Amino acid sequence: MSEKIGFVGVGRMGANMARRLKECGYTVSAVYDVRPQAALDLAKEIGCEAAGTLARVTQVSDVVITVVTDDKAMHAIYAGKKDNLLQHASGRVFINCATVSPKVHVEVEKLAKKAKAGSLEACMASSINQARAGTLYLMTGGEKATFEKVRGILTKLSDDGKLLRHIGKAGTAAQVKALVNMVMNINTAGLAEGLGLGAALKLDLKVLTEIFSQTGANSRVLVTDGDDMLNRDHSCFFSASHAAKDSGIALSLAKEQKMDLPLAVAATKQFGKMVKLGLGELDKSGIAELTFKGRGGRGLKK
Image (tube, rainbow, N blue to C red; front, side, top):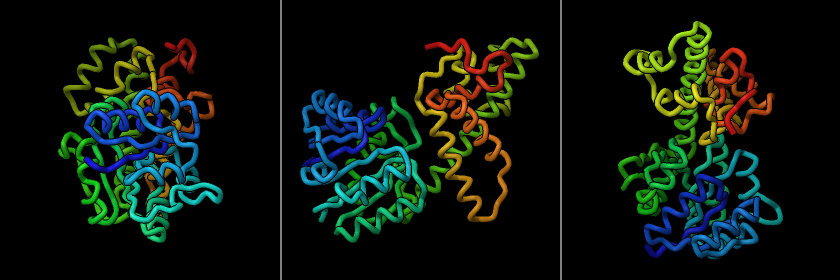
């Protein structure tokens, strides 16, 4: 475990990945975040540098893991004019874990190659608890040689590699991740409507969810979000704003293929409505606030 690992983006996912790798014996060399205090707090906790610039993260690291918010943030960290990760990046490997457009991963790989560095997308289909426990489902895209170079690190994040999949060239893992989140978001919206209608019919919702779990209405979302929808506890593990963004990525792919996906369109509109109503930072389970009568975000658990 000789690699020195830097992190860019230390929100709930990035910070927990850093903690995990530190516990596994890796040297976390530096952390960076657009919120400097978040980087300072984590650096103090795990005993590393809170870098003042992106270039500094690269300077003191062999591998840099990035977990940023969107396409714009990815462009900023790799192509910023005054400061970016690719300054003096020769020989480094960048592992990009954010859910962004496939084309951005392709662009980043090209920029990295120009800087004589490697780039790999490692899209995550899991949440905060899995990041901390090292049981993330990871889908990677990029050159196989780059994947093999950092396989050991990725293995420690993916249940000893049991949950690690190399999909193909740059952009392909991001395509798969977009589809995963698209289907998840459709299921979430569907569950909210089923439970909302059940509530309007004055059915016993505990009985209803138990029946859902034993029939064709069952889904992974029922396990993760069902109780939260009933209890109105929307503590954020995956925000509605991210759901809207990710479904939008999938719809862009569908547009490129000249395909009509009405369910995805409807779900995207619902999550977009949450954002417009100021509910975008609730967990995606908060979509139930749009379907249960008399809710609309009022009376939420804090």
